[in-house]
Image (cartoon, rainbow, N blue to C red; front, side, top):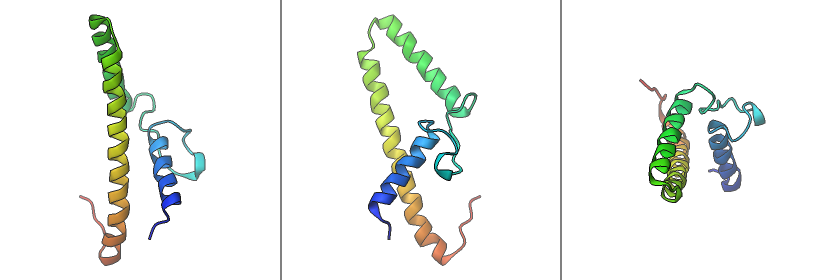
Length: 103
């Protein structure tokens, strides 16, 4: 059984560390910033940023693209939290009955 307050805090901490919102190594958690310079996520984010800038330049506005970016960030956070939830819940069930193997 998970303690909700501690669980929520840890889930947010993992997300923030992975997204580079906090310094790597903080809180003694071995979690890498997935957006560090030159990483896969950094390259994808740079492409998205550049594409949005070009759209804004062509349209002369940025209000719609800001909405798209904000909603996408909310969607990403929601999906990451849900994956964390499913992983946490399945580890309890899965690891008590058999060894978890990932191919």
